[in-house]
Length: 130
Image (tube, rainbow, N blue to C red; front, side, top):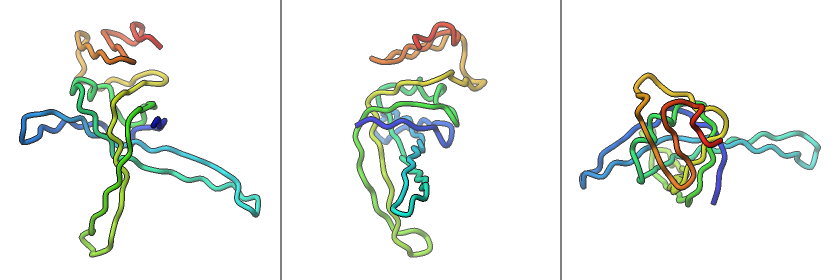
């Protein structure tokens, strides 16, 4: 499955108890349609995403970055602190493609290199393949 959306927050890198690193971030997708009365309805869906292949990509995944993700969706349910049932969507990302420019935060060094089957980011934005 593919989704296209914008990051709602900067990515974070977590380390599991088995010393594996996972990049966690959230993406919002937008859809609009007209109902039977002809009114335009805007619908936003938020996905909590996980990327396990390389933690280096986290420096490129900053708030408002437009990305296309390939992966699979799973659902989760829990009870909130207020006792109300909650549900959410997880997206297990296997491929990340950046659209538009990449905003780099201050921690990215010019020597940072991330390689995936879709994206290669080196040195400056001029080196990006898109």
